[in-house]
Image (cartoon, rainbow, N blue to C red; front, side):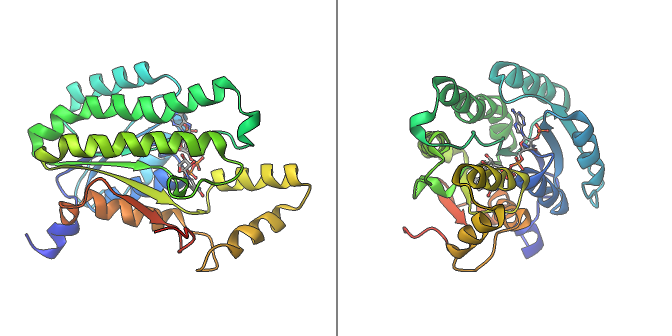
Length: 266
Ligand SMILES: NC(=O)c1ccc[n+]([C@@H]2O[C@H](COP(=O)([O-])OP(=O)(O)OC[C@H]3O[C@@H](n4cnc5c(N)ncnc54)[C@H](OP(=O)(O)O)[C@@H]3O)[C@@H](O)[C@H]2O)c1
């Protein structure tokens, strides 16, 4: 395989979840740019249509979307199964959804933990069960989970998220061991502070709770990043493009921080 083939995704089909904005959208754009046919998944149908129409289609790909809610894992899985039966297998799955609400862990309610577990762990599990037969049949499978650097160093004020991301990381590591024999890889991408609507919301909440300005919160965040700036969704997507490609065939079960050097632990 030549170098373009090693890093390209032509002839592959991808499902990119949480892809109407932010990191998921950037990953969908990257998969399409690399030649994959992309199916977007999120709740907002107008936004899905808009993003689908923006996806590059240089390989003649027919991009599609599925309107589904990660708060309803069984309905989501049912929709994806029916969709795969109709359109054929996918070889790439990006698990991604909206992050859990922020706040001190002591203030978190039972429902916060239960819904975060459902949206992240259960949805990932059900989606993998749906796509795996097609990946085996295709002889190619790349499963990527967008989680957080909190699996290396829990982030204060994100108690429910910290807890849920660890559950996803443990789930992914276990899964990676089970599917490796089929040449299917499972990896986690750990975005650092990335300039998206989610980060803007976290900054707003932190500023309100601390009685300080959003600029001050942003400044404090940037001060912790050796590169001295926030990440862009495209920088996270570049890592997803690599992990989805044939070039990453021997990389599995890892946690890959894309964080400008912020995470202090190894
Ligand atoms: N940005 C950061 O600095 C950062 C850092 C570390 C980790 N992360 C994590 O990375 C993930 C993506 O972050 P982001 O910043 O790109 O978030 P974002 O800008 O809030 O985008 C979230 C995406 O997920 C979709 N979504 C949200 N809830 C959904 C649901 N119930 N069902 C289906 N789709 C849903 C949204 O589309 P619809 O509203 O159309 O459904 C949207 O496309 C999150 O889990 C976040 O916590 C982000």
